[in-house]
Structure formats: C-alpha cells, structure tokens
Amino acid sequence: MKKVVQQLRLEAGLNRVKVSQAAADLKQFCLQNAQHDPLLTGVSSSTNPFRPQKVCSFLYVSQTTFHEPVNIQEN
Image 1 (cartoon, rainbow, N blue to C red):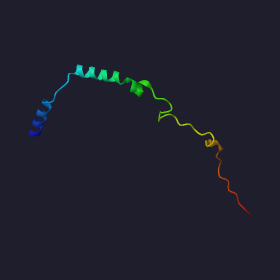
Image 2 (cartoon, rainbow, N blue to C red):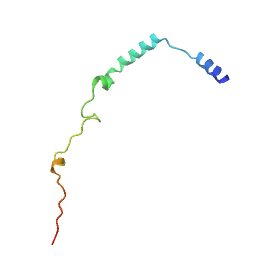
Image 3 (cartoon, one colour):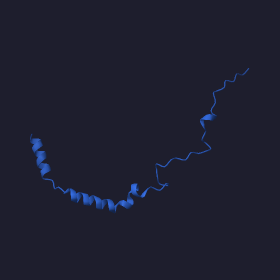
Image 4 (cartoon, rainbow, N blue to C red):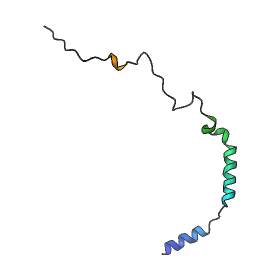
C-alpha cells in the first residue's frame, strides 16, 4: 500500500501540459520538420534501400530450361 501511495504522490507532483497546448506544439513540430519527412517528400530511387532489385538477365535462368537428369551408361 505504501508503494501505491508513494507512486500517486510522485505522479501528482508532475507538471502537466494541457492537451490543446500539446496538440499545438505537435502541429508546429510537424510543420517545421515536414521537409525532412520521407513519407511526405518521398525517397529518391538511388537512395531507397527497399527498391526492387534488378535481375541480371545473364544469370537469370527460367525454370523451363531445367530437365530431368539423364542417366548415361558407359559401355
């Protein structure tokens, strides 16, 4: 019970910010940093680590070129 009372006293002593002030501060922060947000500005294809990888056509082998193994018996 003492721990609960101690925790409540600790929380009661915290300085609180009104929701309207917190919302205004958050809006201001978002507007100030919008030019650095890749969700708003996009990511260039050269620096995007998640871009689709290009397939090398020289090394690409389709599954239709594979055949069943053939047993060659030497006499």
